[in-house]
Length: 239
Image 1 (cartoon, rainbow, N blue to C red):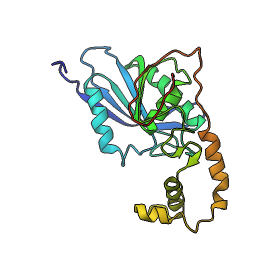
Image 2 (cartoon, one colour):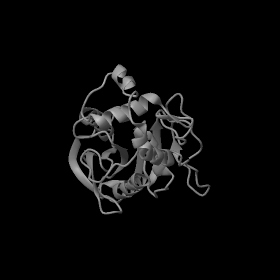
Image 3 (cartoon, helix red, strand yellow):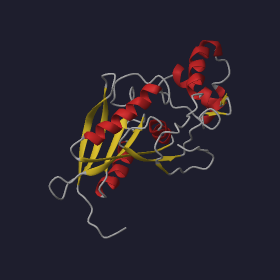
Image 4 (cartoon, helix red, strand yellow):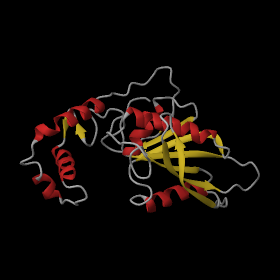
């Protein structure tokens, strides 16, 4: 790294970002302190369901402070229905959630401290989100860096492989639904498969399958993004 002095960092908690259906999602902003009047910065967005104000508090502060010290505004957004954001989280990577990402990108770009350039990044969930938001072509989204992610969740997702929901994943969902708040061992999760009335969950599973089969098809008219993907075991087509 060059010997450039690091920026001081200002953190703004619970900043509300409006989205198209009227909700205001909660974000923590990690802001470089300008060194000169009217200095503006690019923004980096990570949107995930892992609560920023408790579960991911320390990790978020470490990563986003690093970016802010080097001249990038870091935005850590709780997706709708999780953490400090209102709404309902009905499934992973829903259409509404992806549209929220579009709106968040454009909101960040319009702020007086932003130079109009926005990137997205994330590991696993955040990587999937970055890829899917990019397909909507937000005008100010310039780059994405998804890690451990893919554009084809039906055949190449850690939870749902080649048309089959993994047994361990199904056990976890059922066990947590029946006993919320309990911490399960691996053996207990596997045991939870037996004796469950699977029929009562058919509707929820069917809805999940329909959502996960939404294959991302790149629009040939779409701009190409600077795209970096890390993660052995995932495949990615051109976005």
